[in-house]
Image 1 (cartoon, one colour):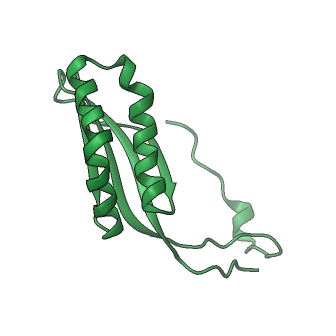
Image 2 (spheres, rainbow, N blue to C red):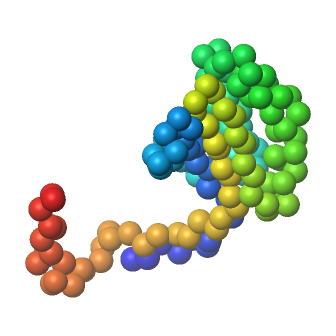
Length: 129
């Protein structure tokens, strides 16, 4: 039996960090979130910023509060126009970036009541390298 829900518009949100002192190091993904409204998406970033602000350097804290007081309105407007939005602050040698992108979430099929092909029983995952 397939789930018959229709695709749903939303936003894919991510939080990345990058060590600026080590330019060869790749950015690291720390969190992701699926939001179903512009409000929910920008609120995810706002809650994260409010949570970490006390631990930030004075300059980074000012960047955070500037976005919370002024930039959040611009973010919401962009998201309502289905445009991506990025928030970046720099704390000492770490760049923290939140990205919000409009997406369409597709419904997934579930396996309840479905007979899978016999080959699924033969699948053996590869051992760890």
